[in-house]
Length: 205
Image (cartoon, rainbow, N blue to C red; front, side, top):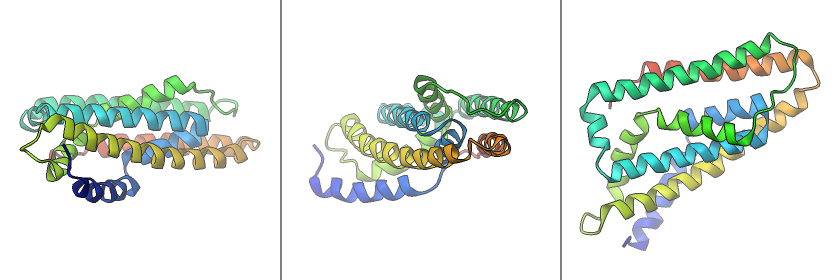
């Protein structure tokens, strides 16, 4: 279904995109600083699943609706802004409490990563701009989208998860210092707030 040469060309292009710092990587960084490596990896898995959902929607042609209907784009975008601001508020509120590393279940971190990705409508627009360059229209389109999306998702999971693990390791070394714990919560809250601001000022592609 997919020419092996096309797939070989797609893989390094996808990895280059995965390595480019973006909202997903910054979210995993903030999650790692805030709660440790395991929740950050779970968040990375949620982000990757969200990316696959975007890819499936793009393959089904629903991405065109998001691009064509400004109100739908804006609705999804503002839901994402509100969710990120809620995460930022929770992180900042912890910085005012007795310093202790927050215990975040992997399932909850997975859900946060999934929702943050799904409420970023620019992901589906990016998918529509990038993946079709490698799709053969003479073959079934949706399976090709899913294969390319799986490559993107797997690369993103590994790279974003590694960033989160690194942040979690750094965070654990600082958790014995009450002042450092407060600052970790403030930094992670600041990251979530900046991501919300970035999404709020996002212009439609």
